[in-house]
Image 1 (cartoon, rainbow, N blue to C red):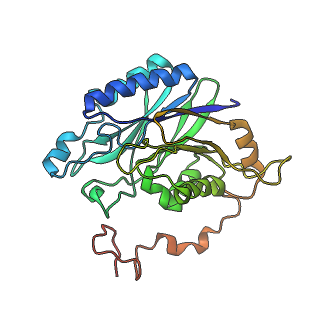
Image 2: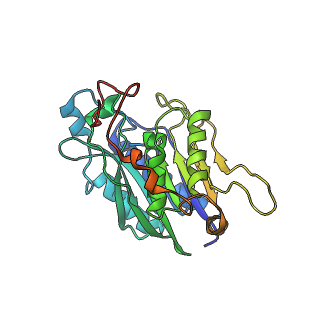
Length: 295
């Protein structure tokens, strides 16, 4: 497989789940017609990243993993012969989750990923965080690609992409709902660079509160034989609503991974004990942190 094409669905959400379902299905059809292998939605598409203030209303807004909203995208994936990463507020106990469900081109569910680093400084403190970074062998017709996911704030923690790399990921799908400015784009560039993998981020366009478009993709290739250095950015959208195609040079990425120095070849995990310590000391203590180990 020479190339993998990911459609970043930079879409303005509608006011209801049913309307988002219809717009989402239509957009996936457009992505397939444009040549996509995978269609990726921005964060929590089922609600347009709107979260009710009342806990009962929040639970009512959540959709089960086997709900019509989610299952419809699996059925469409099989119809289109295209993988779909659909995002939703997932019905879950004791509280909903911020989740992505990845369907392969046969409509089979490969995994449900729940956002691990929930924004506990804000409304997401009322959600249940995830606890794992799964990776799937995604059959794309001409070959298989190892695909994982992280969601928005997960990007802020190098450990997210690192674990996905260690779990085998070649491409990370990143649904997003925040302003994508130079610092956040730089984080994504760094995650791709240090793990030698591709990162595809789908954000909401300008006009969705706190969002500004700039969906992006990085292939992780920092240099090659003919270039002393190169920008690994392969796509950055503007602010407007649209479907943007990111073409990942998969074979080139794999050759690069086989020879370059990043990733896992020269890591020293025996000296990284502090990375898994739960202790949180000043100046990083926060009164509203769910994290254990505040001292």
